[in-house]
Image (cartoon, rainbow, N blue to C red; front, side, top):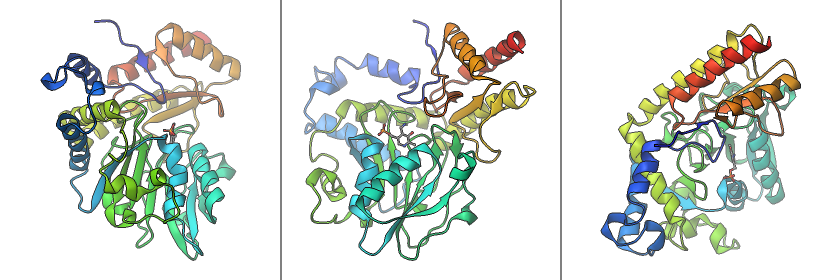
Length: 362
Ligand code: PMP
């Protein structure tokens, strides 16, 4: 077998090796059909069984909460930033948003194009180095919904708890931490995520939606931008990204085989603790960017003493086979994205590299 890279990419990101190998094994002749899954009709029984299996598996991992549907759509989480206000904004009501960083800001930008926005809490003044406490959230008088970003992929912050919003629909962008830990879907009206971090390849966006809120979209909306179109047709109104959905089904099987959400959470915590510990015990050589209590278990962000040193770190790490450690171009610094499929061994190798680099450069 060829050597796998230490892949810390932010997304598209590492996929489980077992899943890639399984996909490889059944690539050319899927379930004795004489063709790959990419070549068959999305109306065929074989494809539909994979499609439904993926939906059922996902709900199964979340404890089969009643009243929810799984939708597969395209256009990335970025299209959801617009579809959410299109479908759920209401005359005389405000779309409420928690302003936690780069991705929340993109969601807010779209919502402002489409209706009235209220910022329920913001940590912009603190350069987004923490997420707000739930007690800081202040909803508007007539909230249409509350939107949160559970994990800010660029800044490296993560909510550890979610608010009880009562009758106000809670909508959450979980693109960068979905299925990295258990969560109570019942607290949310809608959860959405681009697949390319924890779920599978890019090209599929997964939505978990409470059925009652998607029964009828506003009548003026175009067909493909209405949740009721996708819901009413089991996400088969048009051609779905079938290969991506097949891969998601395989990744979900892999999660089941690794102890479900509790199992992956325990491993994720262990991986994150290892790297944060290397940062905290470096006597200031490495500095975490995020306040304790808001640190993400998925995207570990840190800085070095100068930009030159950061460039040297990025270069040396690449030479040693570490991929994707440069922080997002908008914030600089370093970032290790350690989604579910990043093995503990990669994190261990990174920590060893960090020790060595410090010894050579301090
Ligand atoms: N939200 C978050 C938290 C993200 O990390 C990303 C992608 N990095 C997006 C939204 C946008 O996703 P997409 O590229 O699928 O539109």
